[in-house]
Length: 225
Image (tube, rainbow, N blue to C red; front, top):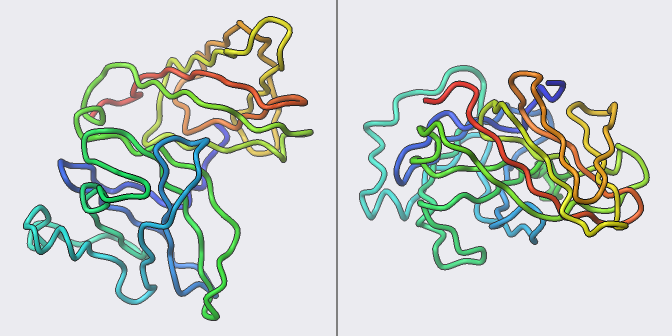
């Protein structure tokens, strides 16, 4: 799998706990996360962590769903972000701890300007993180002329047995699939699917060739927790 560099990593996923680390970056003061219920939806800011203090969910601390004494330390030069999805149940978006959602990273410089967005990253609930069952995502890939215009979707952990189905009607748009930045790409015709048996996959890049394309991806954990 060619996708290697992640904007952030989920250090731990437990009931009412998402524990994230992201590398410190030059010229960046704020480490902003935006969330959506699906990868093709509009992403809305849920928090911005400071380079010095990170983020420890104040609502979860007050409610007692997160206990700072149990968090331990995170290795390396990172900014740490810890929150309970239920703290953002008021929306938008309306997150909850038992359903999957998506996060996207945005750097914020010392003048308060927001930089280019990162990949869309799937966050699974705890039960699905520890299970060996299939994970299913579905949505619409944007239209793009080349692989550079693709939407990057990062999986929460490395996955295997990835199957991609183009849901467009016969005669509709071709879905272009890549597993590394810059390609190569594989076309998937409408009502056809591609099964990957290439071992662990960290994510995919997708676009519609000339128009947007709806697709479904199913997969299983490479190494279930």
